[in-house]
Amino acid sequence: MWLIRRREKYLGIVKITLFATTLIGLLGFSGLLNAQRLESFGRGAQPDGDDILVDDAAGEFNFVRVRFNTYFSGGGFRGGFGDGPWAIDFPDADTNFLRGVSRLTNIRVMSNPIVLEFDDPEIFDYPFLYMLEVGQGGGIVLSPAEIENLRQYLLRGGFLLIDDFWGQRQWDNFYAAFSQLFPDREIVELSPDHEIFHVYYDIDGPQMIPALYRSDEYGEQGINTASNHAILDDQGRVMVLINWNSDMGDGWEHTYHPDYPTRYANSAYRLGINYLMYSLTH
Image 1 (cartoon, rainbow, N blue to C red):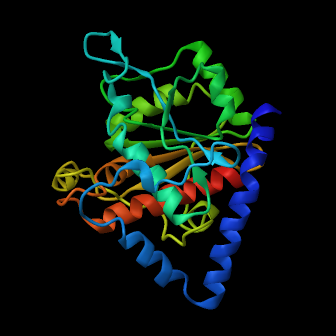
Image 2: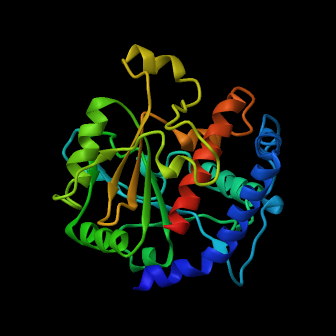
């Protein structure tokens, strides 16, 4: 199938990266090395794009953000460039994550993130899609064409990461939209021992990563823990990864912000890279 064939070009680089990580771990230096590398993302001035390793010929990784429409209180919707929840944290979160992938793995990346919609046939060129804020307003609007194209993308080996939506109301909005994809498939909760948390970094399950200046609000709303959920294919592969009650995008966007705690930024990169590695190898 089209997407599965396209994914094969990444596997050599990913296998080299995973082999190097395994070897370092066997030598006993993995935790120290990873801590040192991640610490370099601490506070300070944000660099330009020159530190991103780019390979235009082969083995490149493109970060693709999904643009979508959202219902609002008047019953209508909005979703143009820069005019909707889909664009929150854009483009800093995307470019900073690419910078992290470049520094912390052997994957060479394209420095400019891409924005596509679910009904665009170009999504089949990319194994990893990212979207966020799917619970805002009255929820996301998915057309029949978007639902069918996304369904085929996922069944052919694609991976969708959904980030940054909070609380029961936003979950209900998310569920109303995405249960249309596979009405016969349950959305399952992933346990901390799931492979996705250990494929590259060894992570103790889901992590609650707060938005900048908003960490106190979550407790007031009764939100105390994050959880990861998934839609699986017939072989148990994660097709859709749902990052609920956590905001990796803010961790990436505010990597260099003096008021954003480094530990949360580090968690955002660790999780994001694990999700990426899983998507490229499954």
